[in-house]
Image (cartoon, rainbow, N blue to C red):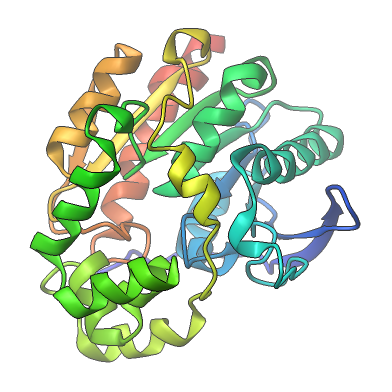
Length: 298
């Protein structure tokens, strides 16, 4: 159950990235202004887009943070490029993150905190490697490990076969589209939500998913794609108790790469920000921001 909150209305604007690509950004102004609270940019993973952060953006804006959520190219209301969506590289998508981050800095005059979920956490790490000086902190939220390459793509596919129906995984491999593993509400719930998550809520969420995935970028994160030692800003690592995609071993590996502790959210699976205990994870992030960012500058 969530606590009662007061919320401001959100607005939508678009940021020009490159190649005539416009990036959708949802903006949630803070309910009250707290001068030393940085703005926050939320970065989604595969199949989600900016809408998936609505709970978080409203919650954090209520605490005093100026909140933003973006949609990658090909996702949400951002520019669609049907012939290219599958083939975008890490650098292409990172250009979108950079454009939105620079816009937030220009709008607010502050370095934002960037929160990256799942594949979006991989994009965040790739961005931070050369841009950590632009941000107040990075939050890796049920995120891909910088050491995915140690397991290799074959082991990852084998893991999918152990967790998902064989036909769904085969279809995903044949079409080069991970959406095939979650193409029904039942499959989506099995892959990304807790066992307690209501079927009715899964049916409401499923139509909002995007069906495209940048397969080229996905293969890139299964190679050495980031050097954690080059990232100097504070890093916060959070995982989910029932996450079958990025389990405790992956979260621990990520935390060790950055020399930090990690938190595990009970009763949540991979889509933590949409699961039943989403507010528990919001509280954890808020408290870690207080420890690692706010109190450091007071």
